[in-house]
Image (cartoon, rainbow, N blue to C red; front, side):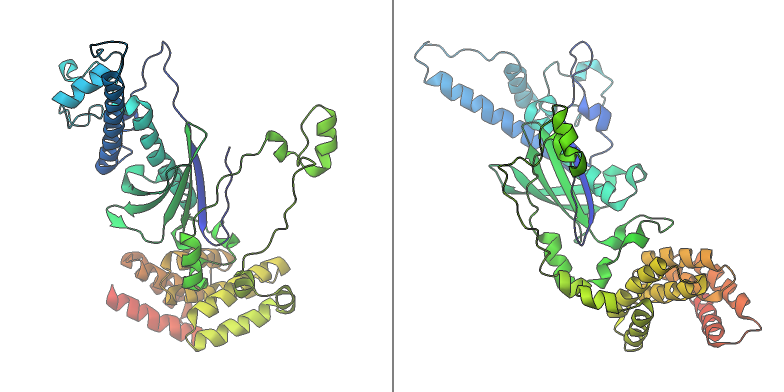
Length: 419
């Protein structure tokens, strides 16, 4: 079991374990089972590293044999080494099981050798890719809904002695600079990966998870967020099962024969908040003084001054405080609509869409949320749906020509023209 958390980024964590042999001791054909999950380039990386490790091992064996005083003749290769040598000589492009074979159903095209992918090095390279992909989709939140072959990872070695890696990812062939993975080997056979990314990439159809975010990425100064994104991940700390026992139950656990945690000889460390904590979240005194109404007024002023990031930060905090205070639905509705407008101004259309969805559930007969929802859909290029929302907002405002109605009416006309 692995646990990880991040203060400012979306976070996903995964640990890849070694596979077990099939009943009867048969080799598990990793390629056959997972051939659709890795990209062609990722499979080539598995192949290259497996081949390089096999060649290095054989060179070392050959060197030992050359200098052996026990025999005048070089001993022949045995076991898996001879077939690997034969595969390298005859099929330099086919070290990966079936990768370069046109017809995998043809028995004559399959080597009886133990393939590099199913050897230690090849399989561990596969583990690294698999762990990175799993951590990535866990951070996003869509899990099995995301086709793993769409994400292609490129690793850079950080420390060969541990070993640890950093990874970047491309989605559908397009580089995504706001995602980063950090990976390390645990023990001899496990690989753990932590994926970090921006909150606007979360997949949250109903906004339930998004509502828990007190500081969306676009409300944080970019320099601070970027520093956190590229900060080298800390090492995983191994802890025993007793680490999970609540402190109040520890005496009973020890009395039953369990191990005490923390041990008496373990030094205690004082936990310090990150240096940017006060800059982002304000001091405790300030947080207690400001009410959701004060934050709403600040957000309104910032919005009028076109300080959209600052306005967004105010409205995000105001919404959370308003929920805690259980304010009337009409008040929360207004805050959500203004927050959505801020998301739109910073071009975070996915978040705007999630917020407007919540707002329309609060008040289905109010035009403002449908107007903002139409703008969000327009920003996402979903023009037919945008036009539908804007027309609905226009119909709601007919006969009630207030400021909001005029805005929605003009927005509907603009949306219709652009569609």
